Image 1 (tube, rainbow, N blue to C red):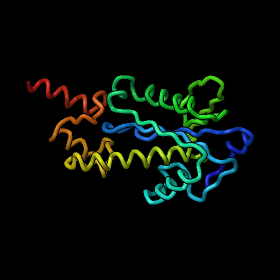
Image 2 (cartoon, one colour):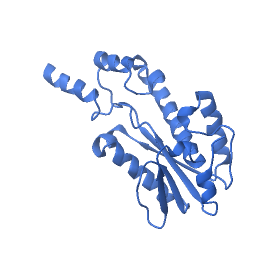
Image 3 (cartoon, helix red, strand yellow):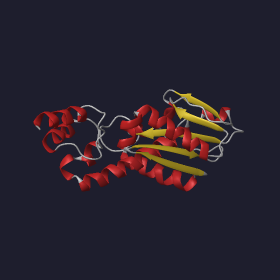
Image 4 (spheres, rainbow, N blue to C red):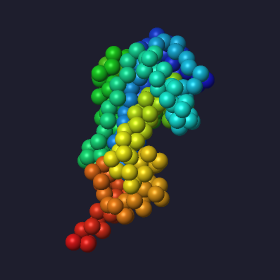
Length: 202
């Protein structure tokens, strides 16, 4: 069970946990989630989403949606990522979620930012220290994986169901063979290299 010493330290506050999934892939959106859990909430499985199996994440996802006081998800498009960069896009999305929340204390996974009338604390590896952040990481991860599974049906030759848009050998080979898709992040390598190669072929 994930330790909740951060939540225990601020037991009188309404706490919003924030995290994202998909900062690294060269295709697909980045998904940012915010979760407010009941005070004193515990769960036998909730942890950093990367430490859980797909089946465990699904169980937690359903339980979080059932038990949470508030959940919000923001999807950041590849176009926005290319325009703003992934760091700024993620920060802007977290700030927007925090503004909509009634929480007085905001916890993020290593993403510092300011929001009027709220206290924001960022923790390195926060998803392994805070159940609120971990819950947000699970919501973001499961949501994004489902989106990439849908893209796999639209573009089956790219293998998105397996690699979720990350820079695997399979994905890079598909990019070279079939070209750049609308869901690719054009500011990311090797997508940018593939686009430059297209220009030289003209």
